[in-house]
Image (cartoon, rainbow, N blue to C red; front, side, top):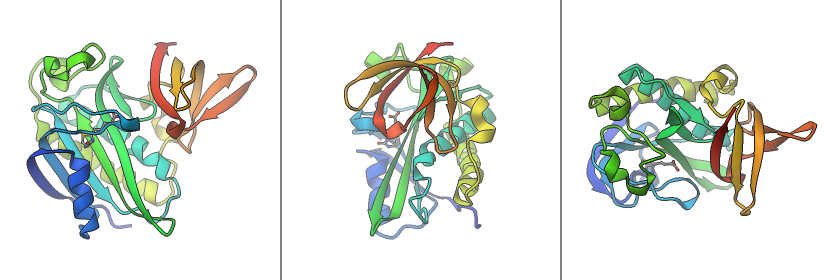
Amino acid sequence: MASLKWSLVTLDEVSSTQDEAAKLAEAGADEGTVVMAATQTEGRGRTGRSWLSPTGGLYFSLLVRPKSVNRLQLLPLVASFSVVDGVRDSTAVKSSVRWPNDVVVHGKKASGVICESSFKGGKPKYSLVGIGVNCNSSIKSLGRLSRRVTTLAMECGHEVDVSAVLRATLTSFQGLYSKWESGEDVIASRKSDISTIGQRVELRKKDGKTVRRMVLDVTSEGELAVKQTRKSMYVRAEDVDLVTELGS
Ligand code: BTN
């Protein structure tokens, strides 16, 4: 399977790199197109939340053209693992994935991933993998979130090279994406990178209910296996609005 060839589009201020990438995708842009922007005025997060995008951060969207809908729900995890690798390889900061799509350092969010897909006749036309990384943004510019988030600069004690974080993340994504495309299990070997496993969590569900559960595992299908009296219960990312890790 051919690996993704990157073609980078760099923009200054946009509403959202997801919107710019969608325009290019609709116009027939190749898989591997990457749209990066210095700032976003309407950065999008998961489940309708916004993503604050002050200067100093890394904001980009990758265009991929998956062949089928099978295992599409794993793309956010694939992208999150590539951020963990990219951050480690470019800055030496150790991060982990807070299921389903946050990348955290010492429990604070440093990066988030969103995947949006367009379909035709039951098949994906394209998917846009949007990644935001708090690199050198000032913590003040992240406003009310500032107690729950961190930046790579804060973790390193100095500014980081934003393009190095991008390059290293893309390199890892290439490898993980081709494994995912060829049907390999992309979770089994990465469980030690998921901080949620082995923790008690509070899950705020999309139906408004909040439950507290012990996390046993993340399955090869990307579901969270949690303890429910004597058996396991499986939770899908699409049914969950917010995950708070409460500790082990
Ligand atoms: C989340 O944590 O809920 C996901 C955040 C994803 C943010 C990135 S920044 C680049 C891309 N463009 C967007 O509008 N969102 C994603």
